[in-house]
Structure formats: C-alpha cells, structure tokens
Image (cartoon, rainbow, N blue to C red; front, side):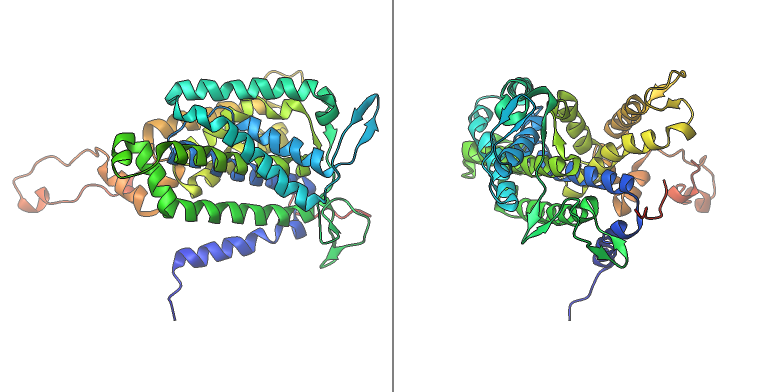
Length: 393
C-alpha cells in the first residue's frame, strides 16, 4: 500500500471542508465564494499564458466576456426584452456551457497568430485592444448582448436538475438548496477540473516546451519545439479557461452587462497571478482568492473598519473598492520586492530557506571558538459575517 503524505491528507481535508459551506453560510458568503471560484479558473488560465509561456496579455477580460455572453446567447431562446429583440439558439444549458468554452477558445486561436509576431509589451498592447473592441461590440450588438442594460442569464440544468432558484423543494439535511447552493458544487467541480488539467499540462511535455520557449526561444527551437504552434496553443487554452470562468460568472450574477468586463478586470487578473506566484497553479489560486475576496470583505465590514466607508456614504474615507485596490496594490509591490516567487513561495521549507538567506546581523567576533561557531538567529526568533445559515420561511 502506498503511504499517504501529509500534503495529500491536507488536500483531502480541504476538499471535504469546501463541501460544507452551502449547509451553514449565508448567501453573501456563497456569492463571495463563487466569485472566488471564477477568479481561480480565470487566473489559472492566465498563468499558463503569462507565467508558463511568457506571453503578456492585458485582454483576458475580453475572453471572459466571450464565455459569459456566449453561454447566454447559446442557452437562451429568442425573445423580446422591452424594445429590444434578443436572439438566442436555445441549446441545452450544459451543451451551451461547453460550446461557450469552445467559442472563447476559438477567439483565442483567431488572435494567436499575433503572438508569433509580437513580444512583451507590444503583445500586451495588442491584447489591450481586445478589451476596447469587446466593450464596443457589447454595447452595439444589442440583439446578442442586450446593449448597455445587458441580458438575463438562463439557469444551468444538468440531467433535468436546475441549478437556479427552482421551486422544487430540494433540501439537504433540512437546509433548502437554492441557486447559490447548487452552483457552489458546480463551481467546485469546474475548479477541480481546471486545476487538474493545468497541473497535468505543466508536468507533461507541453509544459516543458512552453517553459523552454519562455526562457529562450533559440534554445527551444534547437531542441525541436515548434514555437508558433505552442504559442497558439497557449493562447487557445488560456482563452478556454477564461471562457469557462466567464460562463460561471454569468450564472453566479444571473445577468451580464458590459461594465463587468472592463480593463480593470484584466489588470486584477494580472495582479492575481503576480501576487500568488507566476507559473504555479496553487499560486494562481491563492492570488485569485486574495484579490477577489478582499473587496467583498471590505464592503461587508466597511462600518467596522477605520478609514473605510460604505457605498453611498458622505463620511470622509475610502470606499470599499478603492480601499481594496490600495491593499492589494501594496501587496503587489511588497510581493515584487520581497517575494518574487509570490505568496505560494512563502510556504513551508521555501520560506525557511529564504529567511536563512536574509542578511541577518552576525554576533561580534570573539576569541572563543565556541562563540564564533554560534548559529545565526533563526526565523522563529525574530519578532516581527455571519456564519449561520439564513433559512427562508
């Protein structure tokens, strides 16, 4: 029998722990958790492109929009909303979700030839144009997107079970299961699939080929790595991750509007992978949770925090969104200066190794050989919402 290591035990315990929130937490925490899942999926995809393949992208929000609007259009039927005639295909929701992921991947593949011609900041500026093009299209293609007011998102359904707020009396352990509770488990499955797929890719030949291209294109070409094909593949896979995240975001918010998919979202995605750790699946997840959850927590507890005011308040102070950007902006700077490997690089033995390499002050030289052999100070010697489930009557 193979031994089960402490890391596997901790991972299993974490997975079991993630199954419990729908039974105990309120809708606010479930919504926050779903937003974090969206961010994790999108950040893993972006990390494959930026951290592993070494291709800068500022247009990740565009591919999230393709996934969100793609699912909505594919799953919805044609109908009239106010004065706007909205078109739709009317596919089964699960098939529409898969097709939306493929549509985002096709958009990434269509853009990928530029990645073979442009490098670094030039490629970043080219992808930046996608955000503005997408925003213009979302505002003007009203029959597909609903224009400025957006479009209502059809509920996901799997084998006849609706993942929306269906009045079917579904309850688990006496807890009514509405849309957020059902989507929670759907989101967990998507996050698990995204993480496992990315991990396998990084550990296989494609991951090694992308890493070789990032480090030296000349050396990779000498080893027989087809640069153009692997760059195109990286863009396509990253876009598919973004499409899945966008479709899940649409399901979580139940309505998609153009303002969701702005340049700010793309910049937040970059902050996630830098803070968490470039080239690491775990780092992308950690950074995504940090950046996506922080604004929600500051907004929820704005009344109890100094210098932070709630939305619409006339009192002096920072709004929760601005305060969140200051906090993770500072975290971004501190990460770049003191932990280039990201937050994930500060865990376990890596952190101990980094602390040992810091220029700690040594003891004064002494004539005693015993005193001269004293060790340096160790790292340990330095100083440095509601959780009850809301039942609806």
